[in-house]
Length: 288
Image (cartoon, rainbow, N blue to C red):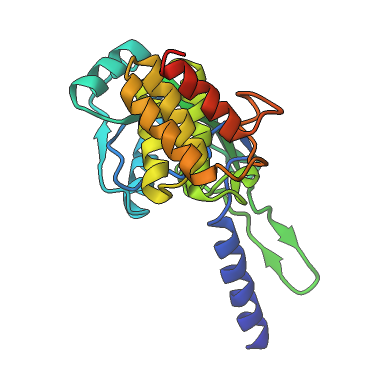
């Protein structure tokens, strides 16, 4: 009886741990988590030629996992067979999705008593407004068979490995865990600063509306975030809204006039305090 209890405890422990796994290879991701209210369209994954139904199955598993995790505005677009990027982007724009999710099955094999099963997947999450890939990751799951064995007092029968469907469900859980787990390098930053960092990345690529939205979200969290104020002012300058930029710069000076050690964003201007940089921008805004 004690052995059974121990095995059960170990099973629960490893099951709990496996639920927190993320993809082994995350090549691109924003610093902030995915909002549960984001309008998302999930499209079929591209299957290999030798397993034509696997793309639909992988997308369905992922869609189901998103719903179970509490995402509220997810739509399955599995009736769309033309999954070329231009086509699914056109559909996403018409239906006002904020993000679309698509992917690819790069390896698929259903095993038997002598051979393991394996499913390798890639996933892309694309921002509809900018057409930028904001998440890109790869996950792989391997299922091993249980081999038949003969011992002195007993023998065991062989058992097939987990099916590819089970493996795709595991991959889907990894991808969802990725959405809900903040990247390690950003864990120490407060949420408003993570939003500022993401907004800055959009600003330098001239995606000003997206940058402005993120800076405004940061200010909703922390109205005195000088980095958000400065960067939002820069966006307003780029868009010709000089009066709005001036008001933001004036607020920075009022808040941090005595804080000459407050550094600017390193990628904007190194070795100049944020207040001095703001004064410089303010003078230019006033036409002096």
